[in-house]
Length: 120
Image (cartoon, rainbow, N blue to C red; front, side, top):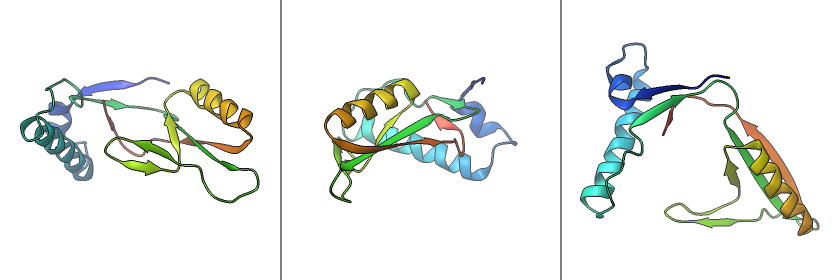
């Protein structure tokens, strides 16, 4: 399915884009500016475009030991500990599932559909 790439500035000017989406765009821009100006993060072109997608864009992998109902966790910078791994590629998600199965883990792969424009 086609993906439409839209510069952030156009999204903010577009009357067809909801105020909720615009608010999310502005929040992301504020966070990015904070990181650059306050934390000294390098300025990049990240989050300067939106990708309007059609169809599934995210695959979520969860796992637990076979004899427990306790989700496995992963550690990530900034967000900390989470109980899932996300992938944009079905192939990569299935590869992770297979790796976890080899470690004797029960796994589940879930497809997530987009609910809005995604920053890119």
